[in-house]
Length: 231
Image (cartoon, rainbow, N blue to C red; front, top):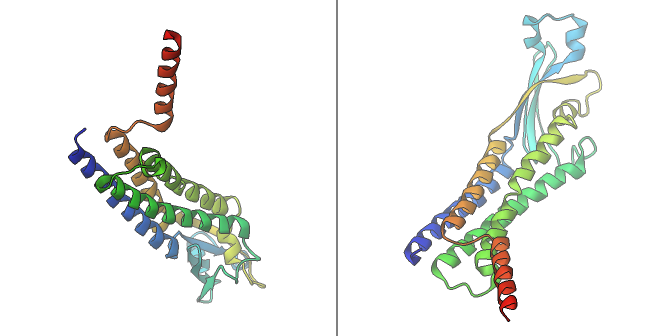
């Protein structure tokens, strides 16, 4: 492939990598990962509320990785409050899993930035070391695909550990809340977009004519074996 086309492909990949780094950083900081509703079960059971009356006992809940907001409804008007995970909710949530999610968010941001630099270096520079050349492009892009791991870990924290329910019942003495509905908000889907863009970067690397590293080494080994047989 002509070098002009390679420059164009790597430049596009660099721009996509920069977009991924910026998107991941913004999504990590925004409190828009989950949006849902929490039912005041105690109040609803006291008055034996029917389906239309449940609206008086449904509060709102939205949060991200660091902070959020909740509105508790127990039939007498809403009580709005803000909360933070650090250090406020550490004793109420699976702290180890939550910190792991944040850690991998940082990994995606860091290596998306690294991949951006290497794409532009390969587009306009002369890579002379292994990690600055084809192997490096595949390596950094593969690490950035851990954005999928961020979504899996966060989804397990929400669904398996009932994160929304833990937050709704935090420091609540008189009432018991349960999750009525919840859905993933913009930040979660932004990380899915980051995952897709890094997958697209992998395809662009392949379109530039660069073989996969393991495929390359296999071909070299086969050639070496044939040469040995000749001698």
